[in-house]
Image 1: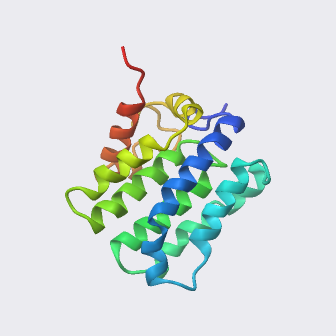
Image 2 (image 1 turned 90 degrees about the vertical axis):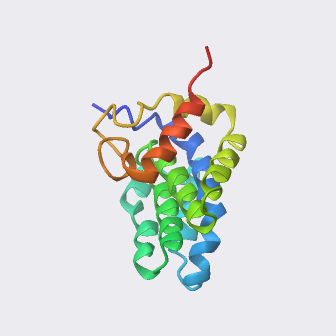
Length: 177
């Protein structure tokens, strides 16, 4: 049985493009420290290719951690968060919930660079630049902490600023009464 955090392949393709957009916005923070390391940029490119149907899920599942490992080649917390945003975007081919992880890490990177406003401004941009089909797909995910079978379980994405960023996103995605 698939995790409710997986989403259908069609929904994963829809949210992969948005996750790539989120990660790409903070990618310069990584590239400023490691200009020769193309792993995060490649992960974002693969997420876009998956979104457009050019890559299959099986091949991307095997490669999903490559972009995030680039975080080991940089030192600043913002650059590390940017690498993890790219890694999460690449992971959407495996599990749709990683799209929220990409957005949460991107907001974290923005907050580190601009404390007090950067994270909120990034989340505002993410919500404003999310297609209606991506909103619909992301609404299918369980609330953070509700299901333990994926990244929205009790792990790293559920805690601290990452968890708060995801809670804000999921709250904004909730259908209005």
